[in-house]
Length: 236
Image 1 (cartoon, rainbow, N blue to C red):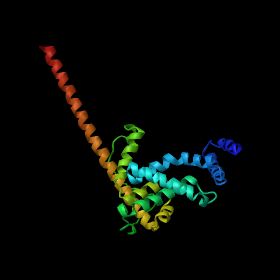
Image 2: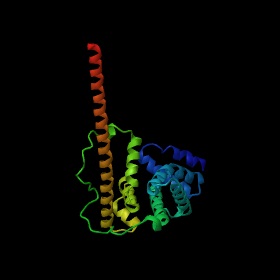
Image 3: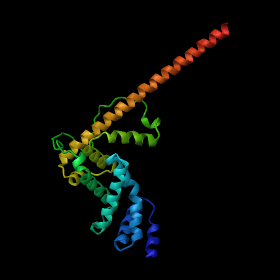
Image 4: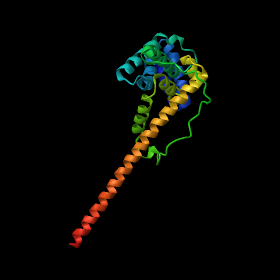
């Protein structure tokens, strides 16, 4: 068994090899190698926790959802189809557990299947001018925090659809199947989520631009006042 593990360690380079590594590690886990399953869990723990936290917007709920996800994955591991991605399977479990856990509390499907003329990649052209690209002024951690705030303002359903499509890169067909929606309803939900996120970012960066402008004006006035004071002192 240790020989198998040593061989798998050599596959940890490059995206293609990583996929092969995961598939082989799944095979080892199905053969009864507990270390292989533990390694799969470790490699996916942070990703699933971030997803759970974005969904629940609560650390305690996210930790519970993370635990529930891996418990179900362990109990139903034998059901994972050959060739299927373990990480994608975990995301699907996490979403299903979230829907079960928060259905009565927050989920509202009303209006999701209203017809909307849109497509997968529709992003509105109307956008306020944010000045220089935000990446020039914010660290990656700051941008992640701002985006997380925007996502947290979405309704529970819109939040899940947005995360699955624009963060986890599921197709709208896959999302529709997972959530029990029509494809058109999923596209409608995604469009609304993107509009809400865009609106939040517009407001955030516009406020920041105005605040920076006021600070710059105040600083300029201060420098002018200092220059006038120095000139009066020199003339005295």
